[in-house]
Length: 141
Image (cartoon, rainbow, N blue to C red; front, side):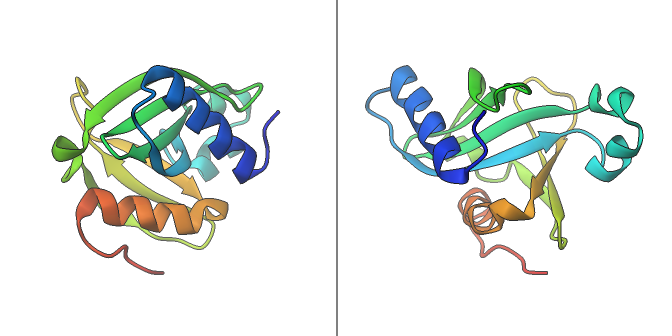
């Protein structure tokens, strides 16, 4: 199971290179989509059913969102691929907190924006991702 950020980013980069050898990752974060991670943790296994794990990667050409395996923490299939030019403006309602930060992201073919929760170990990458997707410096806590 990949636990270190360096290992995770290497695995995601390999998955992107497999899908598109001409593309190169700029920044990758691990995100948990769904309601508050705190609330879902209190609900135990039932709460976990409401969460989806993703790797969000901004590459030179696109924003690529892989599903993440719950068991091995490895990237699985590409859930969404959004051209970089269309990705600006998909992020809204950014909340920077001490442990879990979140933002809303409008995913293709979804009725409303999806809440993406980012853990503090991805703080630097989260800030870089948000500045790339919003075109503005990332807000600070």
